[in-house]
Image (tube, rainbow, N blue to C red; front, top):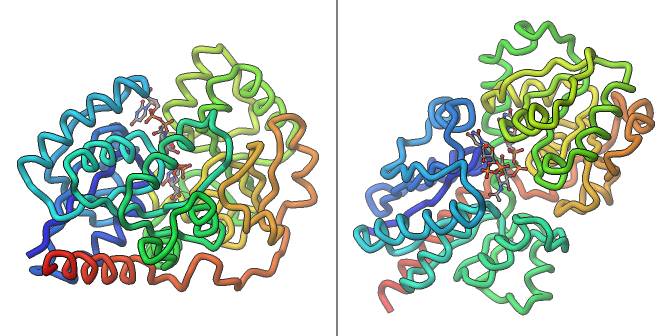
Length: 363
Ligand code: UD1
Ligand code: UDP
């Protein structure tokens, strides 16, 4: 039996882990997956809702560490994760993406010489001011197996000297999730009714990136462009952003429907039926493409360059993006490029991981 410990802590990681955990379950009893939830995201609509809706098994450990600064969170997580790893002695630690939980899991495991697998490896913004960029680079350079979602991610790793069999481009697990839950979302979600939204007649917005939320000028710019857009904007607001807007004493324009963070199924419905998405989220940029909705990304750069090249996404500063809304509203674009794999990345990753670990256990 092979023991794998998955370390997750933030909303997008629960979503990604849902399909990978399901793939692990198919290998029972050869593989036992245990989950450590660091506690980085802790509100029920940022955490529990995803475990319930997406049938993710209850974490074996919840470390309850969230709400602190980068150093506080990361340091406290490393200490507690190390204790669990020493106790459980896993064959491999699995981390996702680029959050402080990812880095903490990586640092705890690498010092104990436990092999690390990284899902969503190789992404780069080339902006080292982003906390996520540092987390990704350090994680990729410590990991033993790197699962990249795109050609660009694979190339980024190769440029940093990380290449060969340890890098596997098997697709993007977020695409798997989008396909898996598309039907269930249509069937179960009531969000369009409860929020009184007409399909293809509203904009969906999300904002949570530190470089936007932690800068009053950026937030003022965003709110003033939102005010200048003469359309309904539905905005499930991240707790970080709500807190900042309150701290800055900024007013919300009346065209905005500000709602609490929603579960994944409601989010999929909001995305699929939107006329346009405006976001600074990594995951939401891709989901816009999966659901064939145009996207304006309020950032200077993106890790998902292929979407810019395809014309599915445009980058814009926080100033004056209202000018882009008309030309992108209900825009029709061709997709059908399998740039994120075939929707079975999770199965392929788990199979690869299993056979690799089996090989090294024998040797
Ligand atoms: C984190 C990730 C970011 C990811 C995002 C997904 C890092 C450095 N950043 O950013 O890459 O895109 O998650 O959503 O790891 N808060 C609550 N309740 C919660 C969660 C957060 O109130 O359940 C508030 C707290 O005030 C907290 C703040 O949001 O201090 C920031 O949370 P944190 O997890 O540090 O960063 P995110 O902005 O969520
Ligand atoms: N999401 C959600 N509810 C929300 C906002 C986002 O379920 O209210 C989902 C979204 O569909 C995507 C993921 O959360 O799958 C993206 O997470 P987030 O934007 O927090 O982080 P990022 O992808 O930027 O790291």
